[in-house]
Image (tube, rainbow, N blue to C red):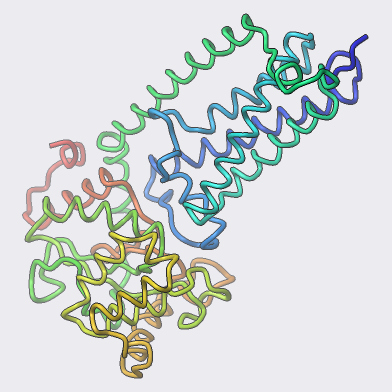
Length: 412
């Protein structure tokens, strides 16, 4: 009988089934994270930079390849894992040849995504790595033990799928993809409906906290001269080289025109780099201290530098040459050695110690970015546009004394 991975040897079939199961589990985890990051259903599910600059799943969840037409990329990995499992449970030569072809295509995709993550996103999602490992393991099994392994040429060894099985699997996968696309659309629509109403309720149920003893003079939105006089008041603990802060920047950029004249936002510098911030034991965002110093050196130039960094985030985060050119262009090279600027940065960072600790491992209450204090209520992480808009509208209505029902705070 022809040598095979799944038709005869029970041990090899078990290994193939385990590889498929691993791909399914890893894919389900990535799908779950995709929805939590992009469509949180609670104020407590917001994303924030807290692990590492490199090992960061949020970069993948927000990337251009996170989904295809609203279908999380992990869905296709899950479908492939299911085929591998089914091929081990119900073995046949046609099934094995089909899965062998798909395993080759999958490993090519894995290599592409790995290169994309490392060299473009400059980060790696550990959930994705788990899938990569199981996907490569499955490929190695087919390469080492799979059917037709002694045939001459790549086409005879790898490219002999069953058209019938391939068509069936393709149609089922497309049907499932359509279901996921509809689910994604429903999650998106819910952000400005019931989810937004729930988030507003959760926001008002948060315990009130004091403002920091020193509020940053570096504002990204100003409605009034005095910070306390605006209907919406935000102290944003942020890091200019934090990918989740970039996400918040993009949401606030959309919201500022809508709430013009009602919004004060103070950017409270909190770079996640050990060089200037003792909350972090390692450099989560190398260069964040220097970029922060550049931004606060001249208050009149702060907003331009703040915006330029976020608008050119990849260069700002990963190119020291770009950072040096930024300093030269704005004439703030002296910021890196100016003692008054360093002291000013420390003054803002140290206000993080004033809040109740959120984790035993950290000395500060503020330990991650972004962390927002909105009208004396703290939100750790960021939220989608629809949810932030609902909170902002509720605060404006409250200031105007309209006393509207929560259901009317959204989708005007």
